[in-house]
Image (tube, helix red, strand yellow):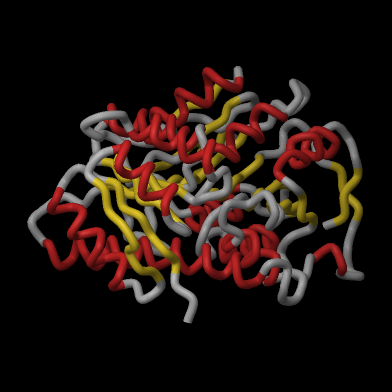
Length: 357
């Protein structure tokens, strides 16, 4: 069996040991080197055939962002997963690393339940490793996803600037969302509701950063916030985001219900609520890069109850193709596009271009 070769760069002796045991415990990877500082880590990466790097944000000599930049110069396609503690300051550093090419991040577990923390970390890394291996082994192999656009029972519809846009994103999502929002023309003033899988303390800095870099009104969702044109809303980490109807208005609702698909917020929860709140009306749905299948079940409900046009990010531009593939293989996607084409396509659609659903 092919196994990923991993280098771990972390200044904590204890956490290096935890990561080594966890990586080995996935059964999908082996640790070929560890380092306690950035410079030694770069030397390890340069001296061996490495498939993935686990990189701490804060190191005693040069910080993780600088190490990431150096790795990018040496190996532009080498996946790097950042390691962070919680807290607002660490979240901002993580988001900066994602903007600069990191594949994903993991938060060092807190609490006294070592066994549970290790199991959760192993599950998280195992899913990432599995998707990396799947993408490497497939290399274009396997059947093409079936798009619902092949159906003969379709109707022609027109969208507009009043139609809500719901988005599901996970691994690779922050950079994808920035690219998407930057590519949207000023004509696209539709309300946009986003579920990006992230822990608490990360989604608010994400929203603030996207607002600055895209020039759009991007906010972290708050309870009873109205769904309105021109507003981009991101579900807060640790909370499910729903849309509820109050008279003629639609408002946002936040709940701490059980995790769905192992995450909170979950796109399925948002999509389910949109199916109810906009039953019989038009909705545009996007499934962006991410592992797993969150969004598929919720998109199915939107398709059943609404007039929905769905677009998925293609495999080549997805960091992880799991979520788009799941929705496409379920026959729920009308159009599969490279990331850079999604924004212009949305402008066409809401600007009066006809679509078939």
